Image (cartoon, rainbow, N blue to C red; front, side, top):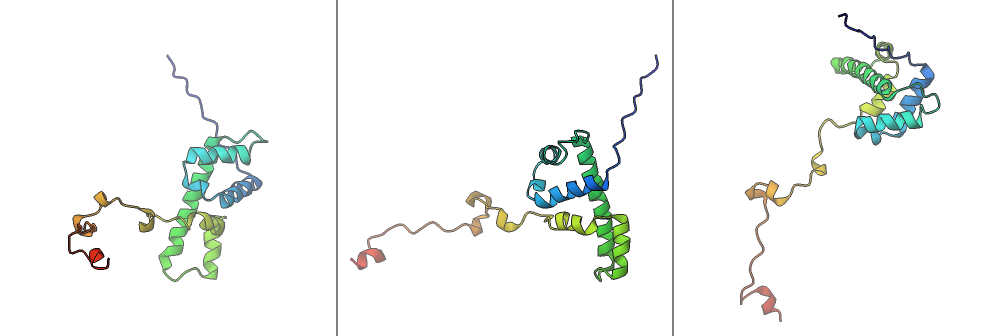
Length: 148
C-alpha cells in the first residue's frame, strides 16, 4: 500500500499592500495583540481581509510569526553594540526586517514581565511580617472615651 502524501499548499506571497494593511491594523489595535492570538487573527481576517477571502487565519498567524522573528533578530543586532543605532545600521536593520521601526513601535513597547503595580496580592499572599497588625481592641481607658 502506497502512502498518500499530500503537499500542503505553500502560503501565498504577501503583497506589500497586504503587509501594510496588516501592520496598520496591528498599530491601531495594540491592546488586542495582548489577548489570545486566535481571537485577534480572526479579527484581522474579518476586518482587514474579509473581501478577498483568500487569506486564512493560519496564513495571518504565519506572517505575524515571520515578522516577529525578523524583527526580533534585527532587534538583537541593534542591542549588540550598546551604542544605539548609527545611520549605517539603519540599512542593515531594514534589510533584515523592512518594517523594523514600525514593528518596534508594536513589539518594542511590550513589557516582558508583569509590573508590580498590576499585581494586587491578597493579605494571605503576603508574608506575616508584611501584614498589617490587627486594630487594637477597645478598652475602658481608650482615647475615644477621654474626649467625651
